[in-house]
Amino acid sequence: MKFAGNIEEIDISGIRKSFEGAGPGAINLGLGQPDFDTPDHIKRAAIEAIEEGFTGYTMNLGTAELRKAISEKFRRENGLDYAASEIMVTSGASEALFLAIAAVVDEGGEVLVGDPGFVSYSALTRMTRGRPVGVPLDERFHLTAGAVAERITPKTRALIVNSPNNPTGSVQTEEELQGLAQLADDHDFALISDEVYEHFVYEGAHVSPALYSDNVITINAVSKTYAMTGWRLGYLAARGEALENMLKVHQYVQACASSISQRAAMAAVSGPQEPVRIMREEFRRRRDFLVSGLRSMGIDMKEPEGAFYAFPKVGDGDEVAARLIRGGVVTVPGSAFGSRGREHIRISYAASMEDLKTALERMRDIL
Ligand SMILES: Cc1ncc(COP(=O)(O)O)c(C=O)c1O
Image: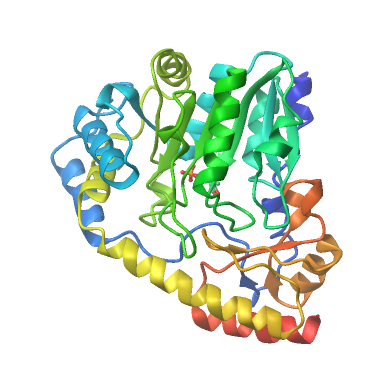
């Protein structure tokens, strides 16, 4: 069998690789998902869907009731005016990211991605025969219009913005997002806004760039917000032709998102939001604990403003992550997120206080 060159070139995710070699008692701070369970009212909605026999295909775009609920969510939480007809339900934010990139990237099309940045962006760009172009972040790990502007060429098809950010924990300001949206308008490329961590903000506020430009494709999911990563349920919103082009890809690769997960997402998006508040406050407590613990070891780090990751500078990130694994703490070397992350490690604080305490003790001995 011969394989496609662009697929052979893609590396197996550095995140997955980082778990190799972990011993049985290792504490895993490598995971990118809440350590909470899906709230009960959401589980019940899924059980009811199964019992009612709501188990067939749905419309390609997703059920009308869920898209209406998401439209209301956008209005209520983000101040965005997306009609239900401008929304598509997908199998996680992952599928939505693929659709957005596939819809705008031709062979050789360039996609601007923050370096360091979430691992999928570059890989998905290569899958569509495009070329990822890394944009260095500033000293606070923010993506600036200046750094993006320097890398725009006639081949630029998209810029991906991820705020709150994985792996750095940064949260872009309103002015920064306005500047980035302006570039998308001036140069007529897509701004793909990955907002999966929007509810985990501890400093500043989450702002959706779609407030400033119609060239924005807004991507979100119930995965992180409601501790539903295994339900594979995300969504995107876009204006006009963009949605239609993404639908062409979605209907052939996925047909529709899981009917059962759509019912669950309906309960998540339009039900009580107290579980989200509880999770956010718990993450804030853990962030404060982890940051002060790391700083007390003399580790140089910025306070993460959102998401649930710390991204301290440790020297050689690969070497430190390897040493930590041998000592029973799993983290992810920053190089997994791009060449400019190599002096860092990513530590997820979506882990219990007890695990964080033990991990800090082990780190103190190892480092
Ligand atoms: C920034 C970012 N976007 C998207 C995803 C994928 O989300 P989903 O599980 O909904 O596909 C992740 C998961 O880690 C992520 O960190």
